[in-house]
Length: 246
Image (tube, rainbow, N blue to C red; front, top):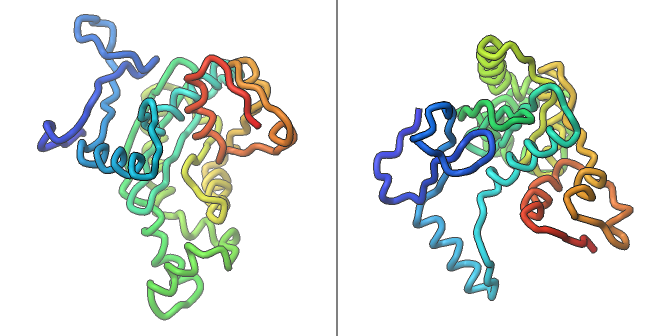
């Protein structure tokens, strides 16, 4: 359910879930829509910060929409037959999406984020307070891989409920998962979620896919190993007709 009490304070768009075009209420066959937008004050603040830094962008894009569009395109390009679970895990919450080769099929906010794992960190390691657990969790000084299942227990319960509802409604099973916002030091979370859900992480063949979309690599970039942390950058570049990464 969408709850926006003061819509005049937001810049909002209503989009078709399959291709991101403007939603047309006159087309009766269109049943799924995506509400996208953000607070006007946040947009103004971001623009002010960029201008004060001497950066003059031609446009602003929402990274979430760009990534979802890129994944939909990649699903179709690579002929993936099963939908992909896309997770944006933030400090306060997790946004869960399911995408297929024909568009965005499901979207659900989950009120379990990184901060919700702190009490579990404290309990598992035996720390005296949550602040110490928080500092350790967000540092790069401890390997949490072995306790991943315990840390994501609450998030996993919500994900399984959401996935189960989707599978009952559509008859399709999730084929792979990808987490798009995690920094390198929290990369183990993606593997923990993948293992507990029993599905692999999405492996993107970036160079084959991007080359087909007019994005080529030069010099050292051509030899660099690419992982899912690059997805956000390349999803924005896909709006260009041609690009050279150097």
